[in-house]
Length: 233
Length: 215
Ligand SMILES: [Zn+2]
Image (cartoon, rainbow over all chains, first blue to last red; front, side):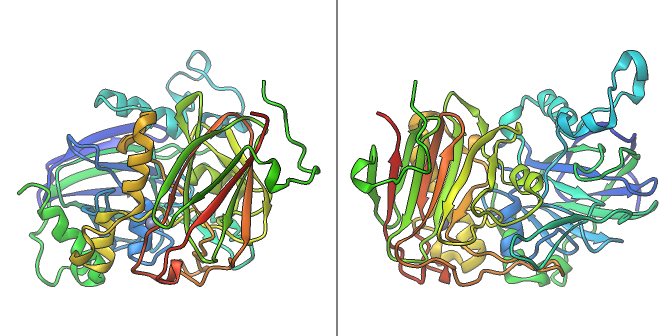
């Protein structure tokens, strides 16, 4: 299908886009071991991605196709229509400035555009352009990253290195008009600081058919999609 | 200045600066001074105490489940867990826990999420998110300021295969969890009114809040 927008987000950068309902955003890893921390908001509204509701309604500890990404108000924001990976982290949040300290000092004067910045810095920078700010930072989905949960007393976490390879992809279909804010800074638990680029493509999505995988996934997923249709009456 | 209460000192109910029973389905908001010890007692067992923490002097600095989970390298909360804000600041430390395991992945119930999970007949039932908004409003906490909460006494196991389940709580009558405030902290609680899943045994019950600090 025809691409409406194509944009390459360099590693360690941030980007935002208003994604219309019925369109699909395809994110593709352009090299191995990339990470893409993504926040979703209902455009022009306070309603936003709610990771706990998304996980518990679909009985999952991670994000994978064909899950529905649900908002604070129970509406589908987007459906994960497909992915080459079966695990995207949603438990560990985005990186903070302090996570970069172990990689040494970095600034513009020395590193120019290779200046390392955290996902928090990038996400905040994009949020402010849309009149939003720190209160809008919340649990993100770290696409292309996997953090395994051990079956022990603590539920110990283990960052899985090398989970994503170049050309791995994920597609998100907007179920209502969205603000998508993303950062390509490394996952906060990645022991390496090797930010890689992610390409973003926006294209028209196929109409939602009755046998849409997200509609059939769970009754909860279908109800969230129906709730998105009732956002504007 | 608030005196630091030594945890080695026996904390007696009679000495508590705060002693409040929160009825089933009701809420609470109040400040724990730095150094204060704050205990939530599960009076009847398997009650879900949905709890949020804020830096009392800067409500923009709020509890973050993801930062807490990541920095402790583990999903479940228990004694020793340091509960962090989304700026990475330490808000409270769990100083005592007779319950064993507490959830911070599952979030709070809301009227809307009840509809998603249980059906449209639950749309007008009471729910934690509404309690958070009601008790948070006098402090300036609205929908944007609500982060993802702790569920004290709830057991939400994750599996290595990536599944999430709701299991029987590990709590019981009289079990408690206690936190030490590492700065002045606003605590916001919804004593969950959920009737549609077994987390409250289909019968929400009261909790008791006890706090020790110098008034
Ligand atoms: Zn609840």
